[in-house]
Image (tube, rainbow, N blue to C red; front, top):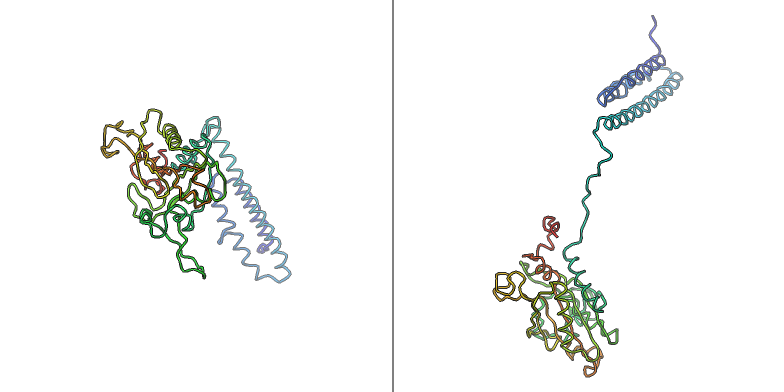
Amino acid sequence: MPKPSLLEQLNYIAKEADSQLESAASEADIESWRVAYLGRQGRLTMLLRNLSSLPIDDRRVVGLEANRVKKLLEEKLNGRQQALKEAGYSRSLLEGGIDITLPGRPMAIGRLHPTTRILREILEAFTSMGFSVLEGPEVEWEHYNFDALNIPSEHPARDMWDTLWVDWADPSSQERNMLMRTHTSPMQARVMENNEPPIRVVVPGKCYRYEASDATHEWHFYQVEGLAVDTGITFADLKGTLYQFAKRIFGQDRQIRFRCDYFPFVEPGVDMSIDCFSCNGKGCRICKESGWIEILGAGMVHPNVLQGVGYDPKKYTGFAFGMGPERIAMLKYGIDDIRHFYTNDLRFLNQV
């Protein structure tokens, strides 16, 4: 009996493979079928290796037929795999493996960072009193950060701000007069230079200082600066504005205290404290046994600052204040370490 030709062997393999594939009932069966017929040592692959022994004309005919058979088997393989998947889905539904009437699994959603939340609360408190919100540059000129705020180059008050200076190429000057702003107060001068009174603005933004980090200090942090300038503004207006702010943020039952303090760009200057929320003013570890917690600094805008931007200090007066949102959040939510705000620890962030 003569040996079957390669074409006859191809047709036989195609029929046999088709029959075997139809009987495959699992992923394992399908994989075994693929290895047996289409794998590197599969029957179809081994048969094609004999093409080189045929005359060139026969080789072309058998090669075309072999490619057709191979493509057909691959299409049937994909179809059988899809049919098994769909049968599995249907079987799962019938057996109760998936109940499409049940609600889906809850998705984890993002939330606002605690600094963003407290910033929004602070800004909302002041915008409700007629203040506008502005932003300023984080890389600032020495003039606005110090000189325009009544802090000339030799003023000892500069030691209060540990400055990060920026080196930049200016062929006309060898002075380091660009820096990372140490507070948001430079916007006082910028706003007044470009606007005529009345002015009522709050300025949120990030600040930078060259200092070591600890539980109450960070080298980068947020501040909110406030400024109001008009004719007839008095210290009573400052107290009333900050009084309403503190009541709104910390609660109506909080007690407020103002004490004299020094800031070069205000005169007189004050710090503002609230009675300790933990001990209600009796004295504890949080308030260092004083019964009070300082929350911000403020004062009446210094006449030199007004005069420096072209305002007549005999006509106009104003007040300014500055606070750290992270410190406000620490006091409001009982957070004991400012570094938590910047470590990206989800255990902390998910609590807020």
